[in-house]
Image 1 (tube, rainbow, N blue to C red):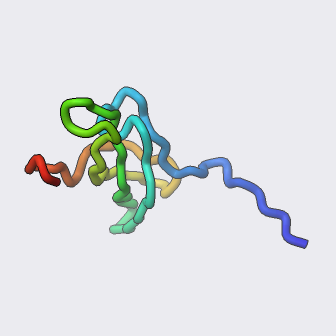
Image 2: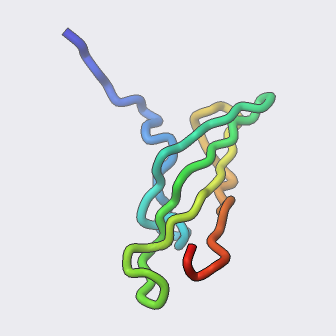
Image 3: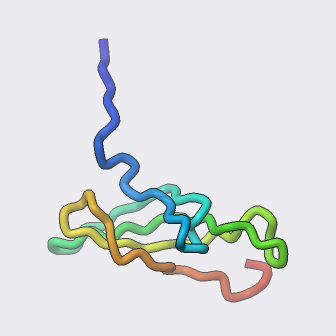
Length: 85
């Protein structure tokens, strides 16, 4: 029989309500390790804005980690520039 336990650092990255661009969700992380630094790209779902879209804007975020478990320096990496994006 399998026993599956959630890792203490899972999810690796969770939404931060204070960051409007990722307040609703963080999904699909993709890590890349270069030297001692792990770069994590992820889909971020922002807070809904009635003037833009009621569902919230989806962008790509980036975070960095020195140990592969604790991610910091979160910022938007790919930002929509056109109203149709």
